[in-house]
Length: 133
Image (cartoon, rainbow, N blue to C red):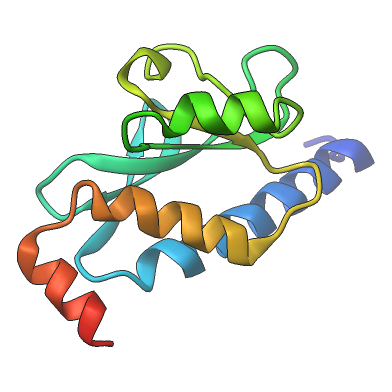
């Protein structure tokens, strides 16, 4: 078995760190499970719809977070910060937003985005549990 190129090791380590950060943000929310969907780590409320996933930018393979957004949020974010936010293929027409994770990563912002997305699919019981915390 050959050795892994340094750049591949660095990319894998970065991806593992990004996934660990995303897990921390997502799994802190009530009722969340991690699944693999189309080969990507995806977070969903148990037995319900997914609300975010770790993905790669379709143009250049950079790490990104794709998340469900309320109506109007996609346009607002992409218009205000097109260097960070984008409309992802496939799910973009349903209002999802892409966030590049390779520029000015702020984990507090990621946690807020993830929670907003989670609130769109969470059950009333999960919302009540979170709001009591």
